[in-house]
Length: 183
Image (cartoon, rainbow, N blue to C red; front, top):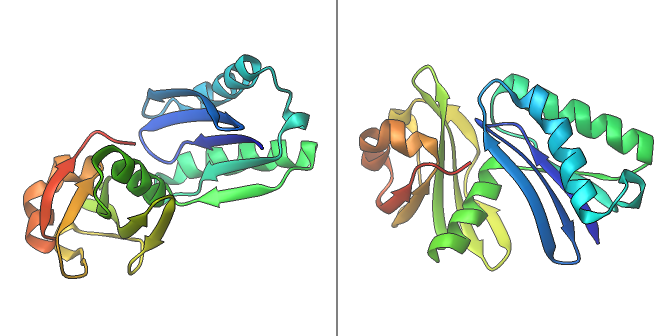
């Protein structure tokens, strides 16, 4: 399988190609520069993989939650490429992708994701990760850090919201540790 994936929903802008298990990627933390960066990133990873868009099997993208403009950038680009090349599109939760990455990195299976949504709010979701399966427990939501909810038990936190609001989030979700700078 040959898959193009991109995400512009957070402060990071990224594009990757997955070809039969090998990954070629570009990622840059670049708030408000996604529109200028994402197309060159896509061109670069496709060129490095020796692929044309028409050789892809599908396109995946981070559907948010995240910055409204960032999500719109990804949706617009994916829609254009998919329509032109007649490719299926796979929307992926940005929070679920972070949960899977944190589980792989730390070995924890219960992940509480908090991304700083600005203006005193976070994008929030709690996940159970088993192997490559990510299951949302509850709902993804945007709320004040003092309003998050998590099922009982210990969690591992990930995301920029933990940097900005660790004290408030820790009072609402029992965490055994957290990683902040993950996108």
